[in-house]
Length: 152
Image (cartoon, rainbow, N blue to C red):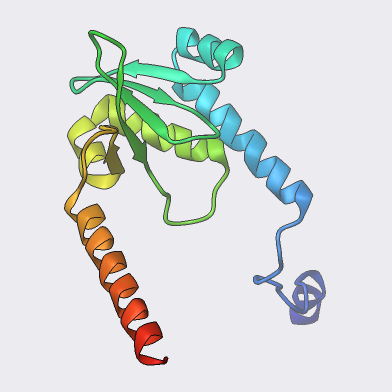
């Protein structure tokens, strides 16, 4: 009896095997099916026709794209005010990220704002990091010029 059981069990389990293209395509198809199940019909139609999902939340209108960062727009004007980037902790198909973003925005928008990386889109504002980098670049340039002059 025990020998029969051993015959049916693979001798080695290759749990660290690399996924094949077929595995990736199956995962992508399953993620797309899940997204189809989660989205209302109107949002699914919009995704098929325009390539994006738009969802109006408390803080703005979110434009979720499979190939770029999510845009956050003012609901009244439609002007893009920020970009959001939600990264999953494991490699996953794009549609899985879209499911996660859509469900978070729809059901827990405040959690989305705490979880996603949100970048303001104010083109004429310098942040403190930008100012620091400018000062650092100037200091490096001055140091380079002093080294060049002292080498003569």
